[in-house]
Image (cartoon, rainbow, N blue to C red; front, side):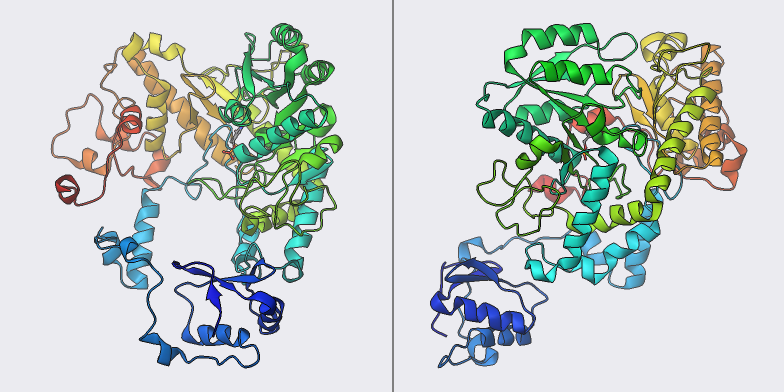
Length: 600
Ligand SMILES: *Cc1c(COP(=O)(O)O)cnc(C)c1O
């Protein structure tokens, strides 16, 4: 049609030099309900995919038909068009050869395949997943349904603002609610994970110091109990991490913190704390800690991953925090597992609002201080202006259906559940860290508890004795997903029940743990060898249990059905014990068949 492409080769996207016609072409496209990408004043870009039809192409051409230009016919052109894909890049090897890509040709067959995969899985649809620090709570169906609606699911992240008024409203409301829940003045939903929110938050702190001529401030204090993403984020923005100590009760050691603040006063940029701490305790010195760091010119980053213990009860923006991230895939119900998609909003106090991430393509209205566009102090941290926008309706639905009272009640039940587990297990698996006991009342935990299993090694035969890992494997035989293993303290289990679990399910978990403790006692008494018992051999697969030979010092019944209720409902682990650490360190391809890969 007389237009030139601005490139010689292409895969699925072409940019067209449209000159003075650009605005008219876009206007004609919008009138026909099509969006073309404005690249510049005189060029447009078009993306096509496998769903594009010949009619779509014909329609696209019609937008470009300025006066006098002839619209070609697809059929007439087809034979003579040279491919835009360079020959050197064309694939000649075979691909997708794994049988799974060539086996399931009907919906029934596909359904059964997926069902078989899910049968392998020990997921929330079978039992609680008590992973501490991960907040594995109910992802309610009513929260999930809206994300399947095409109005939410089928909009391009760069669609013109006039076409996404609904998303703009959702963004505004959700940010307002989250500001209320955290006590902060401004918030951006752009980061795609908690760790990315940390990164955006640390960029804000860095830019704040730079704006005041204090770029030298580059020291970030981080207590030794911190989640690994904290030092990683601080390092990524160019800060130097100084680790501060925890005391015997697991709390930030205030004397050590004071000394380090004084030592680094001139260059102090920030502290990163988690509240309640990753030790699962509300540290009573948190206000004092924030004031101390502020007095030395540093800003306070409060990791918000544990907001499930705070929402409705306390707000980091009010007790001294300057910046936090939330994990909408933890506290606010977005499904969490298999790596996402997550949303890690970054929230800040008023004087840091100008340092929230911007976006070159952002034309969203920004009433709650989401960053601006180009030239902004902190640029985009995600490709799309609103990050993983398509999953935001889940958190919106959660807040809307719960209301302020419901969110507060959820927090209270989460804390109550954790304390119930901690108290009922106290004489079997003591909780490592609690608040200080007061007036004859026992110490309490926040929304999770760390069960200390380290002494069991010694009582069951030393280094080769029963470990926390053995307990996690044995829990599979009981139908439970393991709690968090060896974080933040090696050899312990961190349990977080959340508000979603009923008293029945909490008791089922507690009873399983008590039964496992009784099994450990039999090893302690020497009834079972320390290296050949139901814990060391867990998990037990159906194949192992039904094998001709059974030479173990305990009956099959104890292996498979240690509690009677399992006879009604049993999860069969698909594989026996694997060596996790060996597997992590020795990657190999598990595709079938293996031989061609070896020959290759
Ligand atoms: C989960 C978590 C993070 C990181 O969040 P992601 O969304 O996994 O990146 C940071 N800090 C703490 C304490 C966490 O539990």
